[in-house]
Picture 1 (cartoon, rainbow, N blue to C red):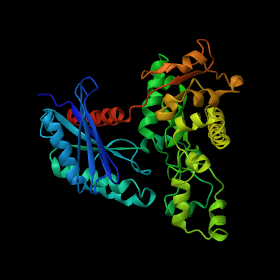
Picture 2 (cartoon, rainbow, N blue to C red):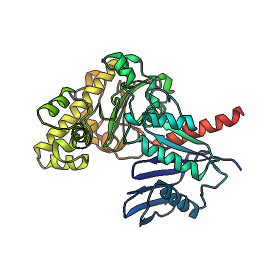
Picture 3 (cartoon, rainbow, N blue to C red):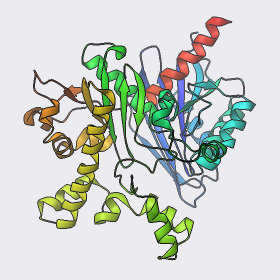
Picture 4 (cartoon, rainbow, N blue to C red):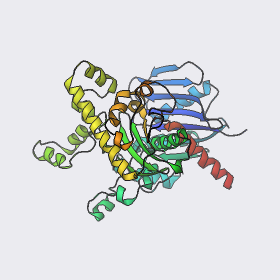
Length: 404
């Protein structure tokens, strides 16, 4: 029996998202979410392909119990983790530093390096490690593969990745621009080239991943040459709850004048800033509703969001020199037509324009929203990070088998 299935796990501090995919055709066999792990009332929602969702509420003490519950749900659909058709488990790992530039089969050395990177990803890497170790205990015989959010961005030149601070200090503390959402940027840039009928090596794309977390990337010939997030996911665009770019001296000012601690400032910039800090909402749908009702704070928050977005489009146009497409993706990018329209408004001299009717269409398919003969294509490309993780995992595992 051919092993063609890949289980994708995205382990958070109190949650596990999962999808089981058949890589013979890229189809989803099941997907689900376990949340509120460790709380009195946890929740598991499981959806098999072509079937009704099942929901379970109760106490799930830890990630070990969560993955065992996931395995039980999969078994009910004849998709158990003990199936010989399962080729590998692919894990999303947020931070891979400079060391991990591609998907990697996990061994003790890999685990140690992921752990060593915890100081630069304290919210994510510990949870990712927990998920990996739990999955290893359940299937020690199965290849476990780490796919890193940062890997796609490791092709950036030093001129883009380095910060202009003392080199010895930067190297000692591993301070540089790493970038995140890499699996999404990789998938979308490649899918955009396909939408244009070209190979990734032929096109230059600006990818705008706009969700509650948001990032931009400049992709030349399939390789990232710049990205907006930095040492952490805080840098760059205005986000749902994160400030994005800001004068670093604001931090010193808040410490000296505001009497705030480092932890308080961390919470402010990561959880109480961005759209929610500006107007009290981080849901773009609600912000647009408030704008339609004449809410001035919502309008200002939207304007600041768009202003930052335009600055990055212009900057990455300059970095690339030639742009073949701008691709919008993720929750806001895929669904908020006013954001897409406003982001390129006034950029006609750069060849960027959207067709109002095409922009208003709702679809789950990749599509162009620019006029037919526009100099630069503007596209909406739904991201699929789980498929990207599964694709990279399967290619690595099958490639290893072919070498043995």
